[in-house]
Length: 284
Image 1 (cartoon, rainbow, N blue to C red):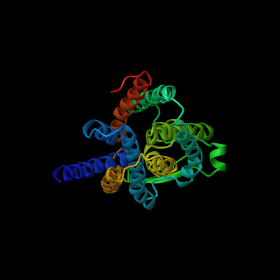
Image 2: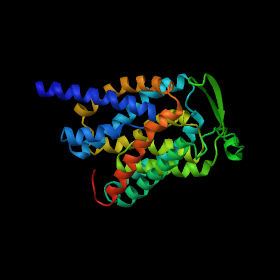
Image 3: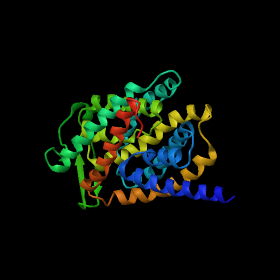
Image 4: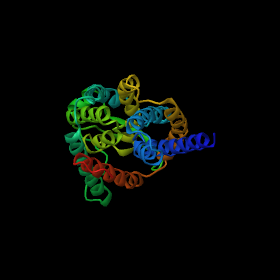
Protein backbone atom coordinates (compact mmCIF):
# COMPACT_ATOMS: atom_id res chain seq x y z
CA UNK A 1 0.00 0.00 0.00
CA UNK A 2 2.87 2.37 0.90
CA UNK A 3 4.56 1.73 -2.44
CA UNK A 4 1.35 2.52 -4.27
CA UNK A 5 0.97 5.80 -2.36
CA UNK A 6 4.61 6.77 -3.07
CA UNK A 7 4.16 5.99 -6.75
CA UNK A 8 0.98 8.07 -6.86
CA UNK A 9 2.70 11.06 -5.23
CA UNK A 10 5.70 10.75 -7.56
CA UNK A 11 3.47 10.69 -10.64
CA UNK A 12 1.50 13.73 -9.44
CA UNK A 13 4.71 15.73 -8.76
CA UNK A 14 6.29 14.71 -12.07
CA UNK A 15 3.07 15.64 -13.85
CA UNK A 16 2.97 19.03 -12.10
CA UNK A 17 6.57 19.87 -13.13
CA UNK A 18 6.05 18.59 -16.68
CA UNK A 19 2.87 20.69 -16.99
CA UNK A 20 4.57 23.91 -15.84
CA UNK A 21 7.61 23.32 -18.05
CA UNK A 22 5.54 22.20 -21.03
CA UNK A 23 3.13 25.15 -20.92
CA UNK A 24 5.96 27.72 -20.76
CA UNK A 25 7.93 26.24 -23.67
CA UNK A 26 5.07 24.84 -25.75
CA UNK A 27 6.33 21.27 -25.45
CA UNK A 28 4.67 18.14 -24.11
CA UNK A 29 6.86 17.52 -21.09
CA UNK A 30 8.05 14.14 -22.34
CA UNK A 31 11.63 15.23 -21.67
CA UNK A 32 10.75 14.98 -17.95
CA UNK A 33 8.20 12.18 -17.99
CA UNK A 34 9.96 9.56 -20.12
CA UNK A 35 13.25 9.44 -18.10
CA UNK A 36 11.35 9.28 -14.79
CA UNK A 37 9.08 6.47 -15.93
CA UNK A 38 11.83 4.40 -17.56
CA UNK A 39 14.91 5.10 -15.38
CA UNK A 40 13.42 5.83 -11.93
CA UNK A 41 10.35 3.58 -12.07
CA UNK A 42 11.66 0.89 -14.42
CA UNK A 43 8.61 1.09 -16.67
CA UNK A 44 8.75 -0.48 -20.12
CA UNK A 45 9.42 2.16 -22.79
CA UNK A 46 6.24 1.06 -24.56
CA UNK A 47 4.09 2.20 -21.61
CA UNK A 48 6.24 5.30 -21.05
CA UNK A 49 5.52 6.40 -24.61
CA UNK A 50 1.80 5.75 -24.09
CA UNK A 51 1.82 7.86 -20.90
CA UNK A 52 3.81 10.56 -22.68
CA UNK A 53 1.16 10.81 -25.40
CA UNK A 54 -1.57 11.23 -22.77
CA UNK A 55 0.54 13.85 -20.96
CA UNK A 56 0.80 15.86 -24.17
CA UNK A 57 -2.99 15.96 -24.45
CA UNK A 58 -3.29 17.01 -20.79
CA UNK A 59 -0.68 19.79 -21.15
CA UNK A 60 -2.42 21.09 -24.24
CA UNK A 61 -5.84 21.08 -22.53
CA UNK A 62 -4.58 22.89 -19.42
CA UNK A 63 -2.56 25.57 -21.20
CA UNK A 64 -4.75 26.22 -24.22
CA UNK A 65 -7.71 27.41 -22.13
CA UNK A 66 -5.61 30.21 -20.62
CA UNK A 67 -3.86 31.15 -23.87
CA UNK A 68 -7.15 31.21 -25.78
CA UNK A 69 -8.76 33.45 -23.17
CA UNK A 70 -5.82 35.87 -23.32
CA UNK A 71 -5.68 35.77 -27.15
CA UNK A 72 -2.04 34.69 -27.01
CA UNK A 73 -2.28 31.82 -29.51
CA UNK A 74 -2.84 32.20 -33.27
CA UNK A 75 -5.90 30.04 -33.93
CA UNK A 76 -5.78 30.35 -37.73
CA UNK A 77 -2.11 29.32 -37.87
CA UNK A 78 -2.84 26.38 -35.57
CA UNK A 79 -5.81 25.10 -37.61
CA UNK A 80 -3.95 25.49 -40.92
CA UNK A 81 -0.73 23.81 -39.83
CA UNK A 82 -2.56 21.09 -37.90
CA UNK A 83 -3.73 19.61 -41.21
CA UNK A 84 -0.10 18.70 -41.95
CA UNK A 85 0.78 17.54 -38.43
CA UNK A 86 -2.31 15.31 -38.08
CA UNK A 87 -1.65 13.57 -41.39
CA UNK A 88 1.99 13.11 -40.41
CA UNK A 89 1.06 11.77 -36.94
CA UNK A 90 -1.32 9.14 -38.30
CA UNK A 91 1.19 7.97 -40.92
CA UNK A 92 3.96 7.90 -38.29
CA UNK A 93 1.92 5.88 -35.78
CA UNK A 94 1.00 3.32 -38.45
CA UNK A 95 4.66 3.02 -39.53
CA UNK A 96 5.92 2.17 -36.01
CA UNK A 97 5.34 -1.57 -36.45
CA UNK A 98 7.48 -2.01 -39.58
CA UNK A 99 9.82 0.96 -39.90
CA UNK A 100 13.07 1.48 -38.01
CA UNK A 101 13.30 5.18 -37.17
CA UNK A 102 17.13 5.46 -37.19
CA UNK A 103 17.30 7.93 -40.07
CA UNK A 104 14.53 10.07 -38.58
CA UNK A 105 16.35 10.26 -35.24
CA UNK A 106 19.46 11.64 -36.95
CA UNK A 107 17.48 13.94 -39.26
CA UNK A 108 15.28 15.50 -36.59
CA UNK A 109 18.12 15.61 -34.07
CA UNK A 110 20.21 17.57 -36.57
CA UNK A 111 17.34 20.00 -37.09
CA UNK A 112 17.08 20.57 -33.34
CA UNK A 113 20.82 21.26 -33.08
CA UNK A 114 20.56 23.74 -35.96
CA UNK A 115 17.62 25.43 -34.22
CA UNK A 116 19.62 25.53 -30.99
CA UNK A 117 22.44 27.35 -32.78
CA UNK A 118 19.95 29.75 -34.40
CA UNK A 119 18.34 30.56 -31.04
CA UNK A 120 21.78 31.09 -29.50
CA UNK A 121 22.56 33.65 -32.26
CA UNK A 122 19.34 35.49 -31.47
CA UNK A 123 20.12 35.43 -27.77
CA UNK A 124 23.61 36.83 -28.41
CA UNK A 125 22.19 39.51 -30.70
CA UNK A 126 23.93 38.27 -33.89
CA UNK A 127 20.65 37.02 -35.39
CA UNK A 128 17.47 39.00 -35.95
CA UNK A 129 14.98 38.77 -33.06
CA UNK A 130 12.74 41.56 -34.31
CA UNK A 131 9.05 40.96 -34.98
CA UNK A 132 8.47 40.35 -38.69
CA UNK A 133 6.32 42.84 -40.61
CA UNK A 134 7.09 41.38 -44.07
CA UNK A 135 4.18 41.38 -46.49
CA UNK A 136 3.80 37.68 -47.39
CA UNK A 137 1.11 37.17 -50.07
CA UNK A 138 0.11 33.63 -48.99
CA UNK A 139 0.01 34.55 -45.30
CA UNK A 140 -2.16 37.55 -46.16
CA UNK A 141 -4.51 35.43 -48.27
CA UNK A 142 -4.90 32.87 -45.47
CA UNK A 143 -5.17 35.67 -42.86
CA UNK A 144 -2.40 34.15 -40.72
CA UNK A 145 -0.89 37.39 -39.40
CA UNK A 146 -1.76 38.21 -35.81
CA UNK A 147 -1.19 40.26 -32.68
CA UNK A 148 -0.93 39.64 -28.95
CA UNK A 149 -0.65 41.64 -25.74
CA UNK A 150 2.82 41.36 -24.20
CA UNK A 151 2.43 41.75 -20.43
CA UNK A 152 6.18 42.33 -19.97
CA UNK A 153 6.28 45.17 -22.53
CA UNK A 154 2.72 46.23 -21.59
CA UNK A 155 1.69 46.80 -25.21
CA UNK A 156 -0.01 45.07 -28.16
CA UNK A 157 2.47 43.51 -30.61
CA UNK A 158 1.47 43.07 -34.29
CA UNK A 159 3.41 40.49 -36.31
CA UNK A 160 3.45 38.94 -39.80
CA UNK A 161 3.92 35.29 -40.80
CA UNK A 162 6.48 34.31 -43.49
CA UNK A 163 7.40 31.19 -45.52
CA UNK A 164 4.04 29.41 -45.15
CA UNK A 165 4.98 26.41 -47.43
CA UNK A 166 8.19 25.84 -45.45
CA UNK A 167 6.29 25.87 -42.17
CA UNK A 168 3.63 23.51 -43.56
CA UNK A 169 6.30 21.01 -44.69
CA UNK A 170 8.04 21.18 -41.32
CA UNK A 171 4.76 20.56 -39.50
CA UNK A 172 4.21 17.38 -41.52
CA UNK A 173 7.65 16.27 -40.30
CA UNK A 174 6.73 17.22 -36.73
CA UNK A 175 3.59 15.10 -36.93
CA UNK A 176 5.55 12.20 -38.40
CA UNK A 177 8.04 12.42 -35.51
CA UNK A 178 5.18 12.50 -33.00
CA UNK A 179 3.54 9.37 -34.32
CA UNK A 180 6.69 7.43 -35.15
CA UNK A 181 8.93 8.33 -32.22
CA UNK A 182 6.23 8.76 -29.54
CA UNK A 183 7.15 12.37 -28.71
CA UNK A 184 4.96 15.44 -28.40
CA UNK A 185 7.00 17.17 -31.13
CA UNK A 186 6.16 20.54 -29.57
CA UNK A 187 9.83 21.46 -29.67
CA UNK A 188 9.74 21.06 -33.47
CA UNK A 189 6.58 23.13 -33.77
CA UNK A 190 7.89 26.01 -31.68
CA UNK A 191 11.21 26.18 -33.54
CA UNK A 192 9.50 25.87 -36.93
CA UNK A 193 7.15 28.77 -36.19
CA UNK A 194 9.94 30.82 -34.59
CA UNK A 195 12.73 29.98 -37.07
CA UNK A 196 10.98 29.26 -40.39
CA UNK A 197 7.78 31.33 -40.16
CA UNK A 198 9.31 34.18 -38.12
CA UNK A 199 6.52 34.29 -35.53
CA UNK A 200 7.37 35.79 -32.10
CA UNK A 201 8.35 33.21 -29.48
CA UNK A 202 5.38 33.70 -27.13
CA UNK A 203 2.60 33.14 -29.72
CA UNK A 204 4.70 30.27 -31.14
CA UNK A 205 4.76 28.56 -27.74
CA UNK A 206 1.06 29.20 -27.08
CA UNK A 207 0.03 28.00 -30.56
CA UNK A 208 2.22 24.90 -30.18
CA UNK A 209 0.36 23.99 -26.99
CA UNK A 210 -2.93 23.82 -28.87
CA UNK A 211 -1.44 21.93 -31.82
CA UNK A 212 0.30 19.35 -29.62
CA UNK A 213 -3.00 18.16 -28.17
CA UNK A 214 -4.65 17.71 -31.55
CA UNK A 215 -1.63 15.87 -32.98
CA UNK A 216 -1.27 13.62 -29.94
CA UNK A 217 -4.98 12.80 -29.95
CA UNK A 218 -4.64 11.58 -33.52
CA UNK A 219 -1.86 9.12 -32.64
CA UNK A 220 -3.25 8.26 -29.15
CA UNK A 221 -5.95 6.13 -30.74
CA UNK A 222 -3.31 3.83 -32.21
CA UNK A 223 -1.45 3.53 -28.87
CA UNK A 224 -4.73 2.91 -27.02
CA UNK A 225 -5.75 0.01 -29.22
CA UNK A 226 -2.29 -1.65 -29.13
CA UNK A 227 -2.36 -1.64 -25.29
CA UNK A 228 0.43 0.91 -24.66
CA UNK A 229 -1.65 3.18 -22.40
CA UNK A 230 -1.93 2.16 -18.71
CA UNK A 231 -4.60 4.03 -16.78
CA UNK A 232 -2.78 3.65 -13.41
CA UNK A 233 0.23 5.55 -14.85
CA UNK A 234 -1.40 7.98 -17.27
CA UNK A 235 -4.26 9.01 -14.92
CA UNK A 236 -2.22 10.54 -12.02
CA UNK A 237 0.23 12.07 -14.50
CA UNK A 238 -2.56 13.78 -16.41
CA UNK A 239 -4.06 15.16 -13.19
CA UNK A 240 -0.74 16.72 -12.12
CA UNK A 241 -0.13 18.06 -15.60
CA UNK A 242 -3.50 19.82 -15.78
CA UNK A 243 -2.64 21.83 -12.65
CA UNK A 244 0.93 22.42 -13.81
CA UNK A 245 -0.09 23.60 -17.26
CA UNK A 246 -2.53 26.10 -15.75
CA UNK A 247 0.29 27.54 -13.60
CA UNK A 248 2.82 27.49 -16.47
CA UNK A 249 0.52 29.35 -18.85
CA UNK A 250 0.25 32.23 -16.35
CA UNK A 251 4.02 32.29 -15.70
CA UNK A 252 4.96 32.30 -19.41
CA UNK A 253 3.09 35.53 -20.11
CA UNK A 254 5.16 37.32 -17.47
CA UNK A 255 8.51 36.14 -18.82
CA UNK A 256 10.69 38.10 -21.24
CA UNK A 257 11.28 36.27 -24.58
CA UNK A 258 15.04 36.23 -23.80
CA UNK A 259 14.36 34.29 -20.60
CA UNK A 260 12.21 31.78 -22.49
CA UNK A 261 15.03 31.35 -25.04
CA UNK A 262 17.55 30.81 -22.22
CA UNK A 263 15.35 27.99 -20.91
CA UNK A 264 14.64 26.62 -24.38
CA UNK A 265 18.24 26.39 -25.67
CA UNK A 266 19.43 23.68 -23.20
CA UNK A 267 16.27 21.70 -23.96
CA UNK A 268 16.99 21.88 -27.70
CA UNK A 269 20.64 20.96 -27.17
CA UNK A 270 19.78 17.97 -24.96
CA UNK A 271 17.04 16.65 -27.22
CA UNK A 272 19.08 17.22 -30.39
CA UNK A 273 22.11 15.37 -29.04
CA UNK A 274 19.93 12.62 -27.59
CA UNK A 275 18.17 12.01 -30.92
CA UNK A 276 21.36 12.07 -33.03
CA UNK A 277 23.16 9.68 -30.67
CA UNK A 278 20.10 7.43 -30.50
CA UNK A 279 20.19 7.26 -34.28
CA UNK A 280 23.70 5.77 -33.93
CA UNK A 281 22.59 3.36 -31.19
CA UNK A 282 23.83 5.37 -28.19
CA UNK A 283 21.33 6.13 -25.39
CA UNK A 284 21.90 9.00 -22.92
